[in-house]
Image (tube, rainbow, N blue to C red; front, side, top):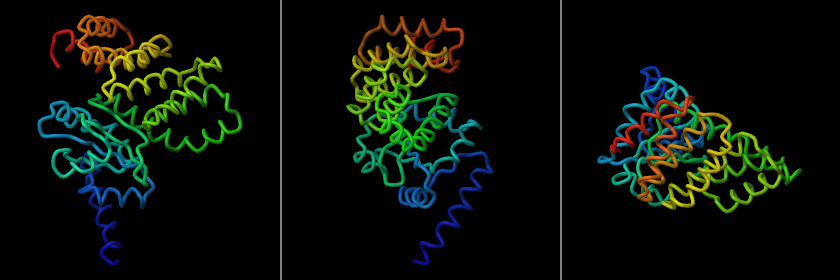
Length: 274
């Protein structure tokens, strides 16, 4: 037991040093990361990567060096693991087969959030905030819906949370309840995007497209719409629909308030580059 008790002070000093150096505080192993998650009650953020993954390297170079992302990473315990080496068993356990994939696990090891593929700094920061805030809000939403099952806003937000947790049938049930209630707020577009993300990661591009199109139609602002449009372009690329890629990428480039990083990605797609 002494070894276990002395581990955390050493770990915390190491992590603090990394933070002061302007870096994300990556845990040295899954065992250390899980222990710290349980001790602190923080979510565990696991980045599954491979040596050959170009988007993984871009994530390391552009996103994980961003000051805001580094600051927000203090909300979670962070771990990078090679899905073809030391992280092979963990990737298999969680069904990870695309890279990069970032999973957010609660202290018991259940998935509560997911980022599939590369996200630029601003988008990654937003997702990290959303995952941690949704995790904190979940118990209150359960209570709200128990008291009022027809609450449109609560149903829409719950749909987004459950989609990120891969509870897709329950997510779509809550999404239908939000629609039935006539809810049109910002959480509805977020729920459509979350369900779309689930189907995109499951390689079900056609299903994903239907939800991203709904998100575009009701997006509360150009920033949200730009995420839906780049997602549509990616899904069309997956489906081999070159005309669809061109359509959505052009719409994104023309969007005045679009996220600049997504605009850049759209321009690359229009130029025929990855």
